Figure 1 (tube, rainbow over the protein chains, first blue to last red):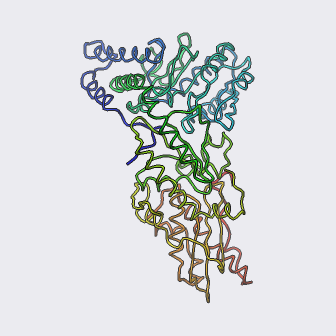
Figure 2: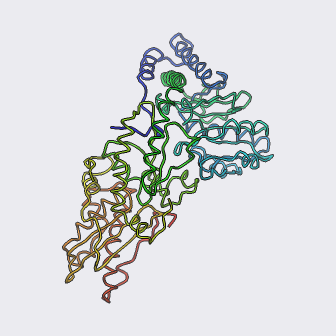
Figure 3: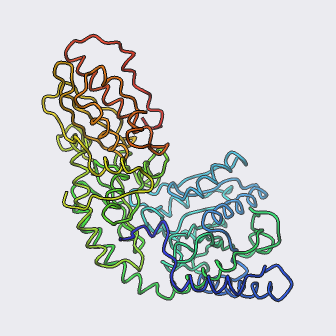
Length: 395
Length: 151
């Protein structure tokens, strides 16, 4: 079986798993307790916080542990919006292809607080234009939230430039770095980031744990009330083994980052080169500014869910932006945002590799996928209309 | 196809996977008595059913489908259920019967069976229209594409 869905989640590494088990055994106390058992857990957690801070170039006091990326995104948006409103700032700039944890929170705040939201275009290449960001920021802007790297099409935004613009305009900058942490050279200080979301299970850590980095001086909004944990800003007994396993996984990821990138790039590029040879297919998102393990393609005339089922039947696990895979009715908002028409967006495939994938995996995908596409096209009335000229090819 | 086509999937019943991986009656009929096409590529599903009708009996049926696994399985099952049947029986085909024959569909996939029923009926209607056979239009009312907001 070939697992090529690492943007959805990764397998926990042996190391992270080991750390998790040991910590669950040794650090089972409640870090809020006064006694030795509690304080042992607390010390281990604070050590993990300090190590994570070093890896991401921030102060340990800027690291808030959460349940993962979605919670971090929710807390970041509310932190900036609620403090902005106190200063009469009611405007947020984000992008059309953010994760729904961002977009849905913004929609909720539009209704709840009457904020105004500007969603930047991500153009055909899946990249924002810094000059458009500059133009979108007004005196009322409380927050710019732009994802570091997109979860579907893997495009990497010009984070350093975005950070500079926001700092210059004195606007808070949040980035959803769920797909970037442990994979790209994430540097909280260098890139003038004010808030950053990350999730452990995307870099071979455990599920249900993540972090939100919040620059000192920004007062975090409390999403979960009921205790003094995380400097009073996030209640709930801390997931100590999860936090320690996350720190271990992030250390491994940062240490091996360059080697993993060197391993992944040729695999990714081989997939792109071979699979775009399939007639009427196209790569989604810019090829250069792209996560080293991300391949996202559209194939005309077929639908993504049936493509995934056939790949699965052949031992290849991937995902799609097709509406039919999600239970929602529209195809991926990311693919629509880069201008793919609905009928093309339904035929999308995302292959996301990790360091565990091999050249053999890639060759198997290159062998099977063209046959699967050809088969589905052979039974597709849409493909027949395209081929007979009754409908026009879009790719 | 030279690739492996055996699989089970926890999301779908064995019958759905069987009809998806080994669809029956795939193809086209060149001089079909009636052709029905329903759905919308924008919504992600199109079914096209071809009927050969002789003396009021469906003597052959073929289909082409663009859509998810259950859409392909529902088309395949529907063609099996109407093959060799008189038109009166064919018109009694319901999406519920297709779902039952498939051993159930997940709730958000039930519309695939609705499309299969509609495609069969659209093909019969086309046959009636082509041959000037009178019918009750009420019998061929298409369900609205309410599962899809882009229609």
